[in-house]
Length: 45
Image (tube, rainbow, N blue to C red):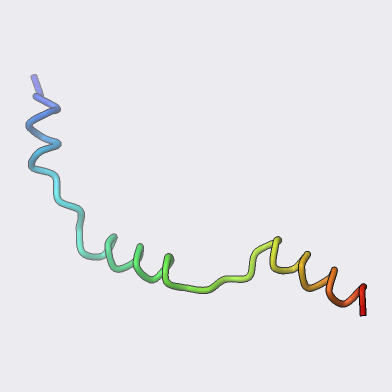
């Protein structure tokens, strides 16, 4: 039977996952909030 605690201790994420995570978190993406703020600014001009 597997000892999940021991397996979790051995786990190391692959470099590809860490690189992808950095790329995702470091991008400045426009989200719905940004779009709504821009629309409100344009409306009040």
